[in-house]
Length: 212
Ligand SMILES: [Cu+2]
Image (cartoon, rainbow, N blue to C red; front, top):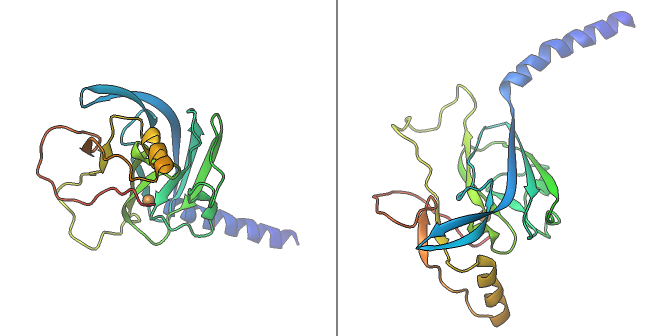
């Protein structure tokens, strides 16, 4: 019996280092906070993650486990959806409010815990309740496993570009008015590129959406 137990322990010791090298746990702290922001010559308080607009970029490799501790420090209920992430057996981490989870209430926190399986590339995360997604969004970069390449030559440069829109008014007021009147929401005052409304650049890319 003792001999058998010793053999089992040896197996455990030899197998686990290999697993630890393969996949990591990526830890992120997302604090939902009000942040004063000035654009188009006017200042308003917007809801951000860690005071950033767009929010922080999540970097992970395929097969990594991603842990995002979201702490809600604003007056609104909040959830975040990891758009395009295959939630295999982790549906409760998907984010749609009232569908896969109760919203995270003011003063509460929630741990989003999922594993990136069978996919790589750049995806988008965004709030998934009311119109908080207007200012709560950012990129998820899923790198291939170590030693594995993308199915195309290595680019000279990589740049994340996030397109969105900017309303001078409070976005929650914009969507609430639309819901009450049954009319389309007021159009935005500007489009944004990585949160910026001004300047000009030549760009090639894909965009942000307001559909799900
Ligand atoms: Cu989405």
